Structure formats: structure tokens, C-alpha cells
Amino acid sequence: MPLFTPPPVPPTPPAIVRCISADGTVISDCAKYEYKRQQNSVSARFTGGVRIDLKSDDVVIVPANGTATIEERAGRTVRSFAVENGKTTYTVDGTARPFDAAARQWLRDVLSTMPARPVPPAKQ
Image (tube, rainbow, N blue to C red; front, top):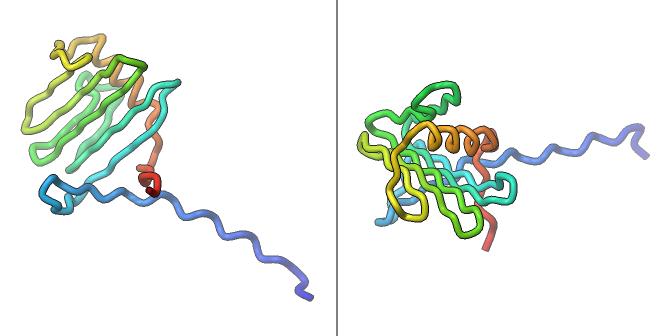
């Protein structure tokens, strides 16, 4: 009979989810997040050296080779923010809106609750 029991092995932290392009190519340096903010569903995807700075006016800093996409579903309302090829788009229910102070605050609120690490997708 052993004198002690070894502690349980801690669970493996979630791995960065591999992103696949439409043509099946693996996209390097990519992370996907799926999480809840209050009762809303949020999905976010970042490629390249994207930085999040909640105190900055930009909120999300996307380098020339990077992309960022954030979408929040709140009931029937869908808000979306994207940066690709230097172009920023913000939409509410599919309609383009200015990325103004209210939109920046929404983005700050959504990103302030983002988990520290990407979460792997649920198994089918």
C-alpha cells in the first residue's frame, strides 16, 4: 500500500485552434474564440500579430498581414467588427455603421470578457 497518493494531473490547457481557409489550407498564427458575454454568443478570429489594447482608440491593432473578426449575437441582433487588408468594417444586423465612440465601447465590452486562451471547438 503506497504511503501517499500522487496529485491528479491538471487538465491540459486548451490549444490554439487551427484555422483552415476555404481552400483547406492551414492558416498559421491564428486563434479562434467562442464564448458567452452575458447571454450573448461571441465568436472571434484573429490571424497575424493582432494586439488588443482596451485603452487605445483603435481597441484592436491589426498589422498589414493580419485579420480580426468579432461577431456578437444578442437575440436577433448581430453586431460584427472586421479588419482585413487595412479596412475596418462595423455592421449591425448586416447594415454598415460608422466605427464611432459607441461602436468602440461595444468592442471594448466584448473583448474585456474574452477568455485568455482560445477554446477548442466542441467535438461533433
